[in-house]
Length: 204
Image (cartoon, rainbow, N blue to C red; front, side, top):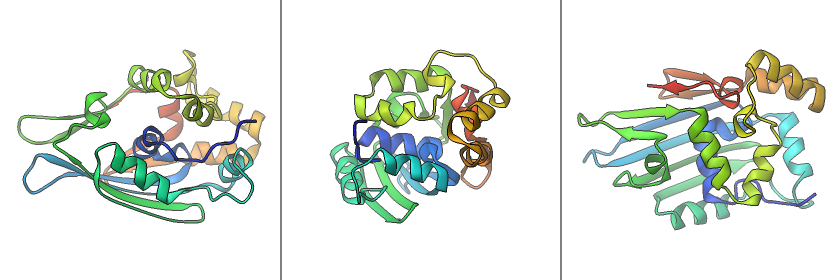
């Protein structure tokens, strides 16, 4: 199996921000605008579940931490994000950053948009996530492929079908983590990870 460093690439870091790391039992994301109204501020915190922590470490170099905070920070800065702060301890991670001018992949991909009245809108759907997968490099696809997600494989499957399949392949603990994982946006909007991986559109 090819080894890779989890979240060592800017695009994977963006997946983390918007998909709750694809691993967290709970991820909290806060999206806000700067005082000037022309830059996006992102705060993220999440924790990788035990089953998926073991899965990722099994695909990594021996002794490697699950989160390479220095590399995450470096790559995000190289992708034109500023005020980047990344902290991790074991399976927990938090990060904050600024998207100056709202010009990053988050906006150019259509995942986020800014209305004329300066409100942030989120639009996550199968087409956008599949387009991201298709444009990602091999390292990122290796990570995403672990989840056998219908959204990345042009398959039609409900969350009720998908979750037991994960259990059959990875065991009951992984099934439980997928079933319980969710992302909370701005303390209000909750999105179940299984629904996301099955391509259910979420727009607000």
